[in-house]
Length: 173
Image (cartoon, rainbow, N blue to C red; front, side, top):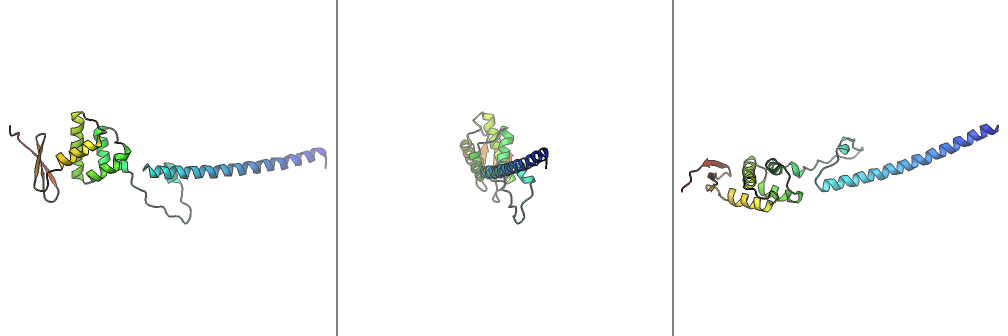
């Protein structure tokens, strides 16, 4: 074996060893990155932001079941109604309060929209969710079954089945 062949053989061994070390480092980095992504996805789901779009495209590992995705709170009809009226979302911590107070029935969404539109028209702070919900409950929803409530020239009649009917009212003055 000549000196050049010996040098070439040594160089191949060193290159192979170096490449193996690099592959090992990359695998370790990939593992750490994968763990970081999973941790961030759990954090996002905790904050009700949902999983990242990239993770939804990846196939599930064998033997694991994909759980039903949690509905995003910002997609709830009451939150979307608020968004439609004010052109902004309420603060995230207020989502459960709004959703619980307003519900998700279409007739409730109409009343919630009217309440938000009134609030906007008066020029009051859109982030005052407590005030809006007080007005929603006291002014819009206070007429029990069979009762009526006059608000800004509109008579709201509440029927026993919970449905509401809007009627134009004349001002008694």
